[in-house]
Length: 192
Image (tube, rainbow, N blue to C red):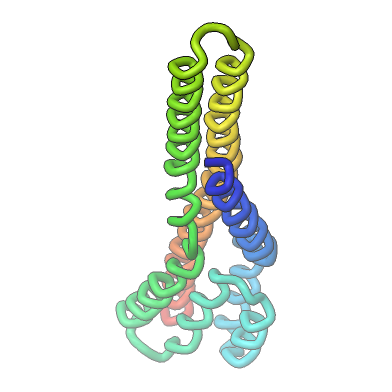
């Protein structure tokens, strides 16, 4: 069972590195960005607002670009367009997290399966050789427990990063919601 555990740990490590690089490029909401957008909208500088948002390259900026692109529409239509765009971004944020979730469950089970097969082997030694070789039996039991420990280590390390990535996704979703609401408020203020 150590080979499947090795494979699972390599997949986990690869996905963790990929997600760390992905989330490392994404900034959280910068409130000063909202203030600059508000000033540009109030000054009717829509092209400047779009240029500023294109430079940001974040999910929040993408959602705001949708709002700025629809600025001449009704506020309900702007809100709907921004919401639809945010919903389309979420799968990118959650990409491959289900694999990490599966590894968290699978790794300890593989380790347990390795322990069970190791114990079966140890008892087979016991049944064929008797009690004359206790070191062979205890060595088999020791090897069996290594599989469980390995599975638990892989699961625990994966769980830490999985929870961090889920936190980042939830935070970005909240940032997109907040930015959308603030943008709608800005548009209403500029229109009145």
